[in-house]
Amino acid sequence: MTTPSWVHVLALIKGAAESTSDVHFGSLMGFDSHARVAVALGLVEDLRGESGADDRDDDIVVTAAGWSFYHEFELERLPAGRANNWPRLAEELVESAEAALQEHWNRIVSP
Image 1 (cartoon, rainbow, N blue to C red):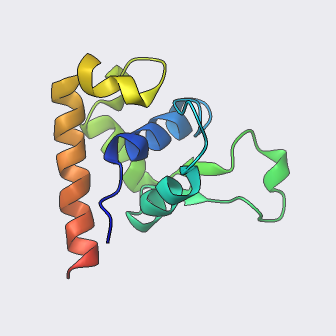
Image 2: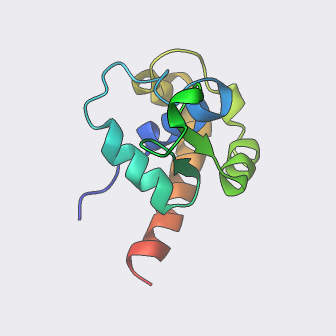
């Protein structure tokens, strides 16, 4: 199994928490795979395609666990703009959040 791009999972969580889930993506290629990972981790819920989904500003919403993660790892401190720039702009913050995501992922895929 390929290791997920954790910075893009962080981007999806931060975006969904603050505005729209894709705001920190320069391209939406791969967005669905990042969303599936975030859903599997229990950090977001994907409501796309559900009845009434068109009435919302965004169809990816942060779960209670996602909000806890967002606050614990201070994702609000990540800069505006594309997530690809975060590792060099906020290295320590990104590394600790990515490590936590990887640890959680490992528990899910290899129980």
